[in-house]
Amino acid sequence: MVQCSLCEQLYAPDDLDAGTCRTCEQLADSENTPPDEIGDTFRSARLAANDTYIIIYGSRLLKPNQLIVLDRTNSNTEIHRRNIRLIERVRRWLK
Ligand SMILES: [Zn+2]
Image (cartoon, rainbow, N blue to C red):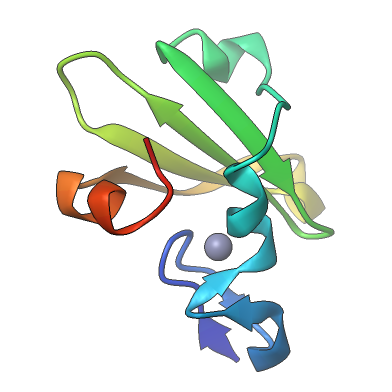
């Protein structure tokens, strides 16, 4: 298993493309928005999901943007949250 450099979850090597999982890649074009209880804390947010995880990327005003991972196999419990630094946003499609 290898770790996605963005959501930091473990995937089979074939599921990663240039270090990023397919679900995180889908975030770039996603028009899905998270439920209000999560989405309301962000200026804007979008969501992508696979069988195991829901991944949410939210942008905030004057604060670092955040990436959140929910575990679909455990009642959508939040299992991971981290700030996305500006340098990562520049290197990727993240805005
Ligand atoms: Zn990922």
